[in-house]
Length: 141
Image (cartoon, rainbow, N blue to C red):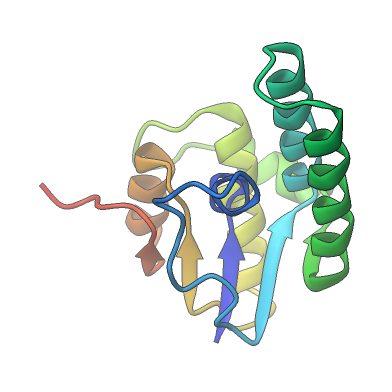
């Protein structure tokens, strides 16, 4: 199974959130926008500055990011992806989430993507509206 990972899924695993995706790692290929590493490192730094992580936990978190980098197919943000992210979507979506979704659309045009994984309801709704199978968030009403 090939999946697209939104950063929210990575962060829940990294921070050992009890609501992390139970299917974590049960795929043949995981892909993500290059944004995942920036967003993850910024979140680690924010947690450090807020006192939620001490130096040992910060070092461990960065080690985990480095390990994840070896296992995630990271897709660089190209002009084509940025152009698509700037186009209209059928639902409300923020800028960084639009880049994630445009990256997944780009990937889907070049390979099979079986699932879009996110814990972000707004992004999940937009991905579903674009025809993706979504897991990690309940978007049904």
